[in-house]
Amino acid sequence: MYKVYVIYNLQVDKFYIGQTKDLPTRLMLHNSKEFKGYTAKFVGKWDVIYTEEKDTRQEVLVREKQLKSYRGREFVKNLIYSRVAQR
Image 1 (cartoon, rainbow, N blue to C red):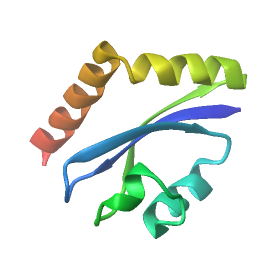
Image 2 (cartoon, rainbow, N blue to C red; image 1 turned 60 degrees about the vertical axis):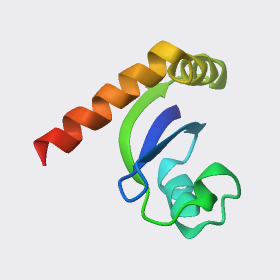
Image 3 (cartoon, rainbow, N blue to C red; image 1 turned 135 degrees about the vertical axis):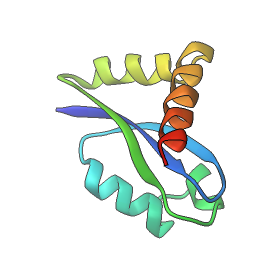
Image 4 (cartoon, rainbow, N blue to C red; image 1 turned 120 degrees about the vertical axis):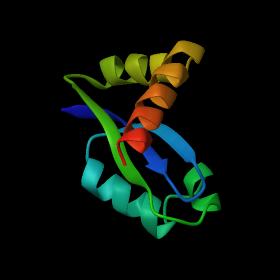
């Protein structure tokens, strides 16, 4: 199974959308800054706020692209703001 995921860093109010086969390891890499790229630039802890499982890599890549679109980013922002409002 493949997963598309959204991680959020409350300290810097940033989110990241990605895909993987091994989410626990990928999250550890994001938080340890071993996963070079966008998330490594920011201080603070990344937390998983959303996941979806797909059977194939192709399906997960399609969904990742959808979440990275304008409408997908609006969905993620609404998800973040609803969670922040619950705190």
